[in-house]
Length: 329
Image: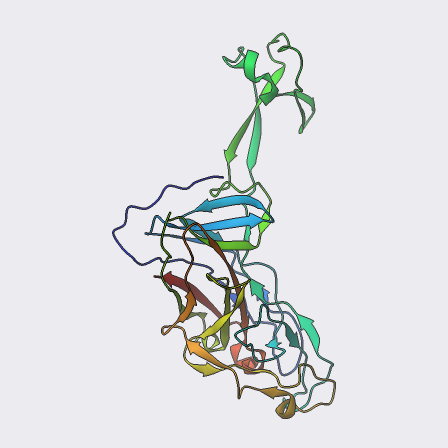
């Protein structure tokens, strides 16, 4: 496992930037079409923990790909306008989403509901910018580390030396050394996308204390889209069998639309199929308590982010919004 240098900040607050997402709606009007909403901002942000006992872990199955007090996120793939299929409940372990186009007046659906995919936590490692340098003189470690060197097969194609009974005789202008000039700052293998994120308590005794997630949601371009952004939080706290729904954040305490009957068909009325009566998002500044982590344990964190499909229209064309999630003890 790779360890990042810990901060020496004197603070008890753990601030984590999970995502800056800018979603362009320049080609999208939910009331007239079902086109995709492009994720145009690929800025990757990171954050740092001031608590040496709290670490963030990227995993792939049982494999630890990264652990440390900083974490980075990528914007991800394009998404479509959507609403949840139902109001989430405390025992839920995931969410599903659907979307469909409606007529010009926004009163009836013009197509059956179709499954949609929201943004979830992810990080794609920075590709390694590698070059091969020809060795002119015999390297000092040749006899013991010759397998770290390459022979050139053709332009751009190199063959790594294999283990032999002993190091081959060194020949000038024959062997190449790999020089990785740009490596992923988190040590995750080049070109790898990870989605399994955990928060770990590395203390040898005692629980972490209740963790709370708040958010700062702002308009990036335009003045209205931030109000449509929704961020659902699932977490595996101490005592939870797995990730469970903890709450949904919005720019202010506001209703969030979902499918009243789980789906809809063409010609169904929007009024009868879309409801928000049972699903109120928590103010981002008030935040959500997600529970505690036992000493030596890890809790998985899952985030869903989307724009409330029933709140979008031509007025938001070209707008974008962004959010920062903060985790504090």
